[in-house]
Amino acid sequence: MGAQPLLLGVEVGTSAVKAVLYDCSGEERSSVHCTVTLRTPRAGWVEQDAEELWQAFCTALRAVALGAAEQGDIAALALSAQAGSVTAVDAAGEPLMPFITWLDHRAQPIVERWVREGRAAHIRRLSGWPPHAGLPLATLAWLVQQAPEVATRAVRFLDVHSYVLQRLTGHPVTDFSGAAEMLLLERASATWSEELCALAGVRPDQLPDPAQAGTGVGRLAPEAARATGLPADLLVVVGGQDQCCAALGMGVTEVGRPMLATGTAWVLTILTPDLAVEQLPASAALNFHVLPGLHTLSQLLGGFGAVMTWWMQMLWPEATDRFARWEAALESTSPGAHGLRFAPMNGSAQLGAGRGGFVGLRLDHTHAEMVRALCEGMGYEVRWALEILGAAVPRNESNVVAPLLVSGGATRSRALMRLLADLTGHPVHGAPDINWPARGAAILAGVRAGLLGSDPGAAARAWRRPMTEIAPDASFRAEYLESYADYRAIVSALQDSVLCSA
Image (tube, rainbow, N blue to C red):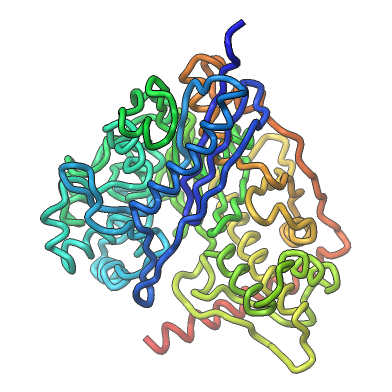
């Protein structure tokens, strides 16, 4: 009897590379986590060293390959990658600069100028996305203007997915969901837009080669096989944007299903058929799903995972049990946080750039109530986005409130999951310690390798795992409704103060 075939899904995230090995029934066999540094050389700049990212990737894969030797043969690999970060490479594929990440805001003046000139709406019509300072359309425009010595040497401008695949196989390929987040892809034709590329100051042939998720890329290059410890004949498959891969990994394959990813960024995603851009909420982005024929309507709510980490460090700088203390703070406080509110640092995602922080802070407020206020502020943003995105997507015939599937760090906290259920009115389903993006990538790899059938949606449903299910407590409905209205009034006032001072 031959060795058991195994599938490798790798999440190349904003803060870490996570390689996860699965058998063909969806059981996780091993996983490896390697952190990647975010650097902030100037205010508003957020970068990742491209070589450090590659070395973290290789370290994770070497560890997985070593462990796999006694379990079976790795049949295929696919990536789930952060989208929106970009680097420039030379003819040899060597990076000329760090990745400018999706968290970066150096290009904000360019986006503001496009808004003033009326270009923003046209960008959105072409790409499906509102222009954003951290995404490559604006980032590359900044690079061409401010660092022409780098831009003129660049042969390619690559996102994380295509950069890693080029080093693995020699082919700089990204899938449509990742390509769309560069804001250089014409949504209607799924090809690079000459007009958007001209706006950024680059050529279409300098961008990655876009392909459908689940497409075969090729086999490992000899140098990559040596660097990763993986077999040279390993099949490498096009994966997808991390949020889309997470949706597939969780089995989110039906229109109208909402999913909340709670990593460094919190992103709400709802599956939808294709929609006209005119139907979209102003703050939402329409993307390709990794499943053919489906799209995602999503909104970046904010870097809430980073905010939680920051506030834990502020409250308990020397503690090693910060998350347990966070959980205890939520458990010990009541809805409404004793009148304290927290607005996201840059204002509400529904209103655009603004101001944030604690509002209504008094001498009698405790650290625990500050934790609850911060979590409720994040929850209000989730509720607001659910209302707005949900109104744009066709409703299910039963009209039953769809469960909110949650992935990422928030699933470690039952108290935070309960808060989200009570505050949004949606049942909340989640499971800690499951890497959904890597799982979705592994499903794509398995289907392409012929090990999971021919339908990735059916494979995802077969790979579903049990989740904790938390129903909303109706007794808090009236109190949260009042607090939610108060929150919206506060963030609107903060937004107005920014506009008045501009």
